[in-house]
Amino acid sequence: MKRYNIIFAAFALMLLSVFASCSEDDNTVEEFPDWQNRNEAYFADIYEQAKANADGTWKLIRSYALEDTIPTTNDDYIAVKVLRAGTGSGCPMFSDSVKVNYRGRLIPSTSYADGYVFDESYIGEYNPATALPSTMYVGGTVDGFATALQYMHIGDYWRVYIPYWLGYGTSGSSSIPAYSTLIFDIELVAYYRAGVDVPDTRAAEGVWITE
Image (cartoon, rainbow, N blue to C red; front, side, top):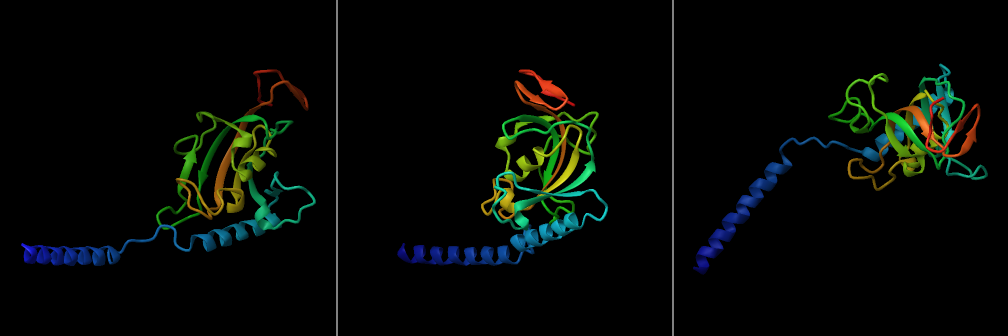
């Protein structure tokens, strides 16, 4: 009986070694190779495009969370490509709620040429006439997203590039790897500021500002 157990154990170890070698040689492609370096290089390139602003449609916006006296680096800014300029007169505050159409994705990777979409409020091609806006609290979003919202006017449609320091940082989230640059297409539809005056309009309690 003991001899049988020894032979069985040896056979089991042999099978494990075969399976292990197969898993190492199955030509599996790593989805996010050299992810930190690729994301840092990607955002650095976008930052330079925004800084040059060759076509006049780019913005660099410093994180709202930083005091003006604090020295900054490139990673303390979001880069914005203005896809369409709105006509609203005011901007949301950190304590406001907003209605937005948005799509969030990562930089291009092995399996996703346009970047993996990790969150969105609409499906397929964006159509402002049929999209159903999502409601969210500005202060409940990552720093880069919150920064963008506080500079947007009603009707603005922006592509926002967020360095990982202003996104999910070095830890990531359940669907977003660490060190990920976030790319958001955002349209500000409305915002809610109960009982507070804004230029050219007033937000009465319970009323969304839409202009």
